[in-house]
Image (cartoon, rainbow, N blue to C red; front, side, top):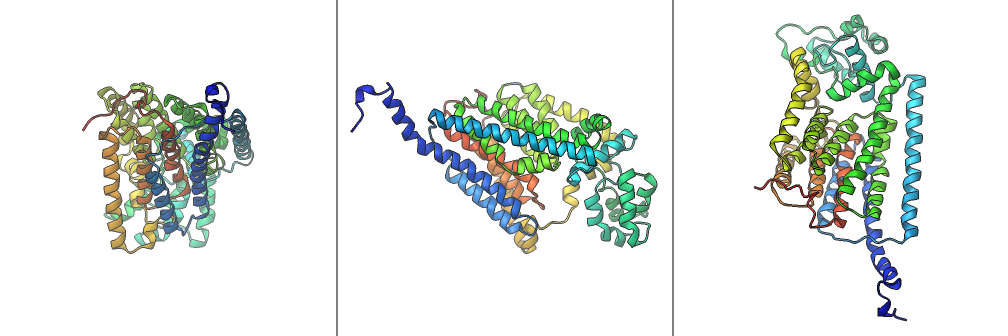
Length: 461
């Protein structure tokens, strides 16, 4: 029996609209789930799977391109909406439980999971002792120390202890940061040997100034637990920023809830940023905080936070700076460069070459590893593919900055995928670089075309 047209909008019509919109809502939810499944796949296709990881990136990019013009309407029954909110509540409790375990276990044992957090903790201690963590001869990167050990031996800057004792001496140094033990492990380079000198100045702290500054404040009070505690606060803050940005897009509450669910179900976020202590969360947090400030027309704050993102980790910090160029203004750039100047200048004065080598140029000194496809293809083919990736990045950056494209979240997702594909190493803590942008780009399927992100106009070509 067909519904009475006269009842349209008086109950039956509303139910009919909800039913007709349900397939679109299911597709929307499945798209987020697919993104989370891809993120999970990176967890298992890790070391030695560089080509598989590239294939996953290509599939994600192809999906985004194929769905870029989709326009859908989400209208959910109230019971289904309550189910989404309940799932968010359960996930949030799971996050809180994992935070509690991570912080408490580190406080009890002193063990910081992941070399990035370990290096941050020890860099803070070195700075509190008056030593420059970025200086030539600093030794705060355990993984790189042993990875390049044989190369240093060949260059004449190997450890001044018998090979069987290197590990035990390093363990003693790692516990105490004793300068005498550091000198044994990393002797001064011979004169007129630039290659040896380089090897002694790329083992310092290789993460950003903002991370170091805040950790130096918190470590005296919280000890090793300060590192997972910082990451936990930033992760929860990131979730709040996601809600803020989505609300600035004037999206419906079910869309915001589904998008937040998509972000929280991304296994790489709690795994790398809460259980482990990957430093990418700092750049991601400040980057999206800057995007939110920019969309809310708070240009001075946006400029400060864009600089904080870059000064937390060069990549993905510099990728967020592309957004700044889309909405560029003199005031925005002024606060960005003033903040950069204030943060960076003291370290450049203290030890220019050490700071540049560790904090900025370090990735360019490292050989390829097996998480990148580049390690598995002939050199000439790798060069050709990197040229193509560079051209893609230039094209996407130009589109983001100069075009009137309203769905630039989609372009940012493609750009971060391109950068990840071009990297000489592609570890799992890089996945949220693009997975979060991918979730945001999917919300554009439900956005209003007459809104250009709170009326902020991009620059014109």
